[in-house]
Image (tube, rainbow, N blue to C red; front, side, top):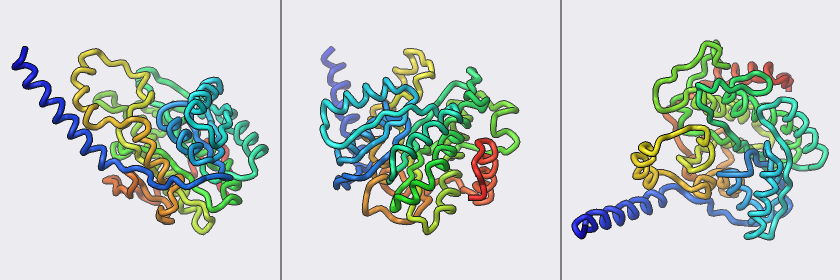
Length: 324
């Protein structure tokens, strides 16, 4: 038993030190100045990175709209945050990104109730096993429909208000997994199916790549408007995103050392989101991808012609006026 302890205890100490070293490279939003009078909208605000983003925004005295599919969950989030933080204001509102009708209704209410929007944080996302063949209420493949089309429509509906509120920012939460994504215009809605082998869900990776192309084209269209667009990879973060994925106890045992070294808390995952949404020192160069609170140069080349074509198709599918 004693010899076992001689091995395990030093190993735990070494792992802990390695973890601390890694944490130092992840970056932290350093700008904690007041956001009093500023209005932010966060999708998927009731848990994970979204919840931590809301917490830090109200800590800085902002007004924050919690856009959530489950309003009761949003209210519970507010109660939880209020136990710690008394500043700022939080407004729960219903938004189902899997429904174009819900997005339009939500946007109408926001435009009616808020004369200014200084920050739109497109954070919400879904990750569903391909075998579930999940669809949105409008019949789109769930990842393409929610992660990309839902935020595409929402952003476009709020765009004029963001312009009027300039300087303002749009943060698109994507992922390094975009590097494994493919934009196949003949299979955007997975009509031809997708490969099921491998560890990652290709539909999710494709949707994260679509997020990036959306941000690139959006930044181009918003040049000289005072609205800046930033893409964010929050890093490998412990959230409820993978709650639909079933793993055996064996996977958890194997995964534990990896998690200890690489898995961020939701608070740590929110730091680059906060940096891009609020930091005054941030470059005004729009359309860049950030990770660890600094510019990240992806291995994936984002081609302007693909970004433009995806925009036009997305506009057609969601009913957005492409003449704007």
